[in-house]
Length: 197
Image (cartoon, rainbow, N blue to C red; front, side, top):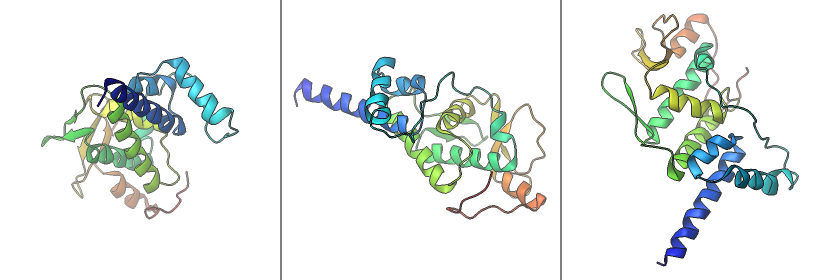
């Protein structure tokens, strides 16, 4: 293999990931972190493949990425979806959970493969929760936050022993989202069924 072939393959992989992340409405900074592409190149990709092509289903998000963690535990349904995402990040080998429920990042820093794994996890999440409450940027924030074991951590339900995402600074009744939803008499939509907000 010639060096130019390898360079072409790398650029193509960066390009494909950038388009995939743009489809998920990832912010420029997030795309840049995984692909190494410049802000200008990312904006041109969006203009060429989405805006100028008449595809108005994909919007460009402006401003800073989400920083707060309150949305993940705002209510039991959000908490359930956040917990689903953490499980998918583990299945994608982005995170691992030790015997003490501490979460550890498995990747030293974002790169193209990391970006594709995040995209696959997010796409699976959207299939499981068709009316997903968490956007790609919120999923990205969750991945970063849960691995720091600071504001968010994994708690264990006292009833069913399931682990779930919990805010370290919020009151925890030690009930996982599923048990809490059951206690409140709410209905959880079966996988694949559209659920309401």
